[in-house]
Image 1 (cartoon, rainbow, N blue to C red):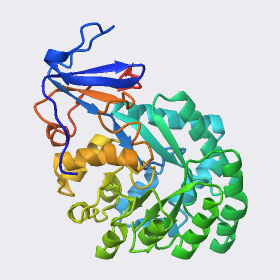
Image 2: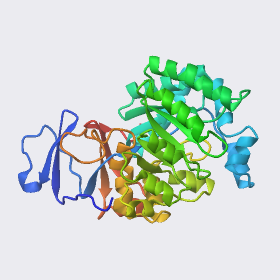
Image 3: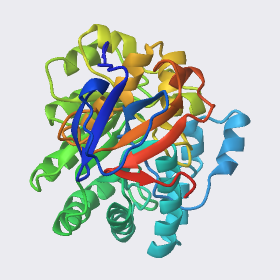
Image 4: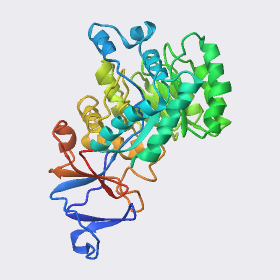
Length: 386
């Protein structure tokens, strides 16, 4: 977390979509097919965003006014808003319409320097609509130059007209088998938190997912200390996400595990929640990832440069710590750190070439000043005006 390699006055060679070599200028190859002059800019790995809900329809700007007028996230949900509102909107949207709206957001993220994106379902809450969301994510994977990972989050809220027990049975007995049959999900997730799903619910759903070989990720400890972190560790979750409300017990539970604690400062910013205790996690020897939580209700932005800035300004991470959290560690938290997340020979050439700047610190410091000169995905230059 506290260091990143830096090579000044350097070259980097891309061959067949991958980073094939790099070094100092005296050793630069002279037989390349094409050259790009960085012109005093930095060359850094593209951002990886390991937690988004960007497949949705419409807007929840009315709830934005509710928040301004003093209603909490939980109060809005109790009134039938929040996730249930998004589910109602999505139910009345065709797959093609949902795809077009979602691709607009994906292209926005690419322009902002993100090259790997995890996308969750969870605004369906009906088998047909959850599958619709996951099929849209599959279409995005095939049509976008970014790396896309899909997460089945049927357990995002309880569907209208059902008890929680009935809905958990629906997830286990109907949704999961169909998701697995169509191979639509890389991960399965549960919102294990106050007012949503309990630790017992989470155990049941993740135990069922294990039969299909789908690895867990967990929403935990956003609204309360829920036990979700410990449930995630028991089920060998790749990541446990949110973590606005944690104690030393959660830190201890994560030590000596393969589970990445992932914090979502955009959600803290938008909802006025506490920021995750990233510094304490790092002091305890843990890595930390940061992600955007891009969604219409609690974090309507996927700008990972802003996430990095919040990591520095609000969570007191150093620029290097925040940089590692939005690149290599967030790539790990979505299962792609062997492919992207660092400048390493053999990895996919997902790279940002910045405008001229003197140090990495300039990226979160001038957090609104345009900083990307070129964005390269799989070795190909991305048109920033798309």
